[in-house]
Length: 329
Image (cartoon, rainbow, N blue to C red; front, side, top):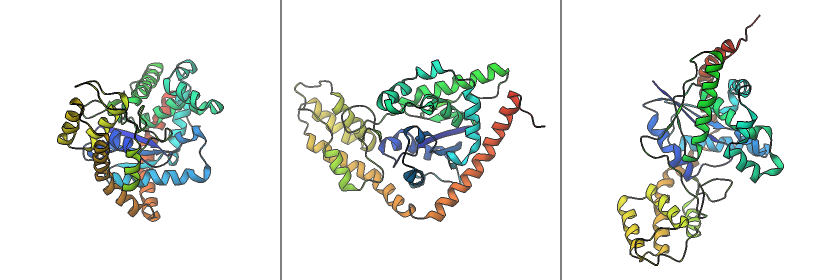
């Protein structure tokens, strides 16, 4: 059975972009693939999170993974920092990653621009840690959004470099997984870019209906179309992108026609969009509220996941150490 792996940074609650970018697909995969899903708490350290909140953020993501439909009996669901083999593989892969190529990655340039006072080594080698996450289970597929495709290519590059350097065919070349469709990138409500926690433009899976209504109501719009069938500006196309993933084709078709005939009313569009988002998120929110305070259950899930993940990770790491020449006396 082929292996699928993905993770989400533990920097807060999950949002609509996480759900449609990956989580829905994760749920479908559990009966068809050998799945590993993890909470990426090491990755969050590049922004120096509050130590008092680190565990709480991990708990939030783990809870929302489960509430969204991931089954710890079908999949391996674990916390990144519970698997020490990942850290060692990260160290070993760093010996075959070069500063020049890492410094040129768009993600590093963007983060360095956004946090110039904190351009740390972990930020530079972030793609190597991502590669270690994937290669530790020798994953075949990685479900990612459009903006993450470059990291998958870097993982393939690091795997190929390791294989070529040591003359082995050990690491597979993981592929982006998208169920045969274009990779989804969910935009934010601020009119541009993607939905993200740091941008403050998210609808969270835990948001209550009133909060969702307020957020959608404040979404950026323009003065409306002035010509039939004219191209939508980015802020309006973003609203339609979200509409296409939460609403029925009939609803989308209705508002497309209203746009094309210059009859669209943004108040109606936002009202419908909020209702359809609430319909999607409310069942998940109810499960979050039921799970989040059940610490015994969350501990059981994390412990089971760590045991299963370490069994796989130790096999990979032992093989890598042997290939590189490490031997016990």
